[in-house]
Image (cartoon, rainbow, N blue to C red; front, side, top):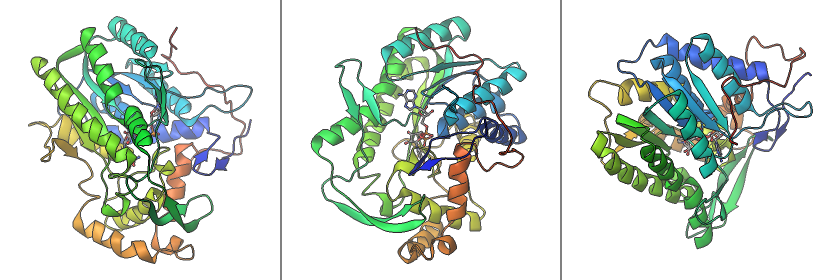
Length: 400
Ligand code: NAD
């Protein structure tokens, strides 16, 4: 079939297998071009490995460190002639590339929040890999069924305390419009913490630990975002920020738990990038479009793979180990948060209107980045050619 992008609001409901493979290939090539890491994790588990920061983490581990990787993700295979989701095609391309280099790449597709998935993954890691040196926790999910109480919690992206009105960018219509977000109820705050807080990360670590699958010196990392004040009502001080505060508390608990085996838990505060998760957050796409323009002008632009390659190379596996801030976080958002970058963003922010969005922001770059998430707009891919949507992922087994 010939696959074209079908954008519906902040998602694209189609994905291109060759385009996704090309996108993954470019990320692999970038990591390889940086050379081997100074120190290397051998066995790496990435929870949320199919897109965004998790995908970049799996690529950096495999192709920067020749690590054996296991990826957990929740993606849709092709069915009834319809294309699979982008993450499915990404994982297929990743596994083929890893296989071609003789690197183990195990995968499990399904709900990482469930205990069934944890048991399946643990069983396979026991049989196929051995103890882990690194566990990356990179889930971004709209809901979670808690295996303890059986309740399905839904996360939301709302301010806390007061309504918040700001400009946002309707990326599909190229319109800058005001948006008002009502404050979250206590129940909504609680539910967002249940989904995006650290409870499930802790559960993974506990179960891996009990199975004896955390190696001496094991490290685990979860990702956070802070950003500038203009996004705080909807992010850092909103429901998602509350969940991230819980993630930080969890990092401290896991860090203590791992001390016996000289392990460490970290939060890495990453920069804002275009991913399926970030495009769904009100206000953030406008901020990212302005940020990209400013950072590109300064030659400081980074995408997921640049951030994660730098996280591995300059922090996690650098001699002397990671440098953390006062709260114990690795700050990969250092360039985004430079005062001169933020001053320029602040200056542009109130000036951007629908008429000036192309001139004052990197709207084109945002759109290109968004389409590339789904395998569209990549050089060297013939989008007019017939393509086979049904692609298998080598090394994939589903629970059960
Ligand atoms: P993403 O949407 O690209 O990736 C989410 C991943 O989670 C995918 O692999 C998806 O398959 C997986 N997933 C979702 N629900 C799942 C489930 N129930 N079971 C198994 N897998 C599931 O998101 P992202 O933007 O890369 O976000 C990853 C982390 O990075 C999040 O913690 C996010 O807050 C953080 N972060 C993102 C940004 C940004 O700008 N995008 C910035 C800083 C930090």
